[in-house]
Image 1 (cartoon, rainbow, N blue to C red):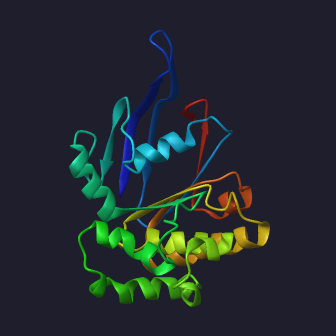
Image 2: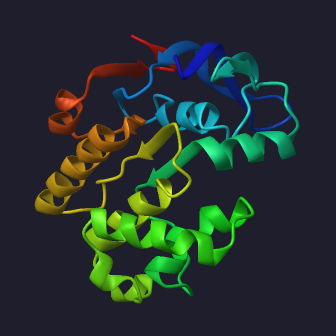
Length: 222
């Protein structure tokens, strides 16, 4: 088991008198090398859940066990280290840094982890080749198509050889053909590297191909 959450609750304070509870006691587990689709209506709490599972946010209640260790109580600094070394992210809006080339964007997680450019460039180039955009390595995001930008984002997510990758509507901004290619890419990456993927999606074709589907509704697993 690579990741486990127990009774996760998340409440946002709106005003002094009002709050919004978006997660109401969610317990899930993710195994190594597993592709899990997270589905449900808008507002069900899917993005909030993966932000907590991906250690980008903290739950109001409950605990997150990552690789056998309770990370819920770690300091922000220690959580950042665990996240950078072990977790990759692909978002609907690719969040590539506009002033950097595709290659530089892919290298960024390694640089944040303290690695040198020289020792990681070959790995970044190999990843760009694997996702099919090596010929675009010196181009900035504004010079790439939407599909190419997402492929660079996938390569970036894999840069530190994470144990798990979270993808939040990764094909939501793509046309049907680019979405199909991106889905195929995620499955081929899992096959090659045996990383777990948790994919938030409204695309039921993608969800049906995954190993398991978790459905959220009104902040609970159904």
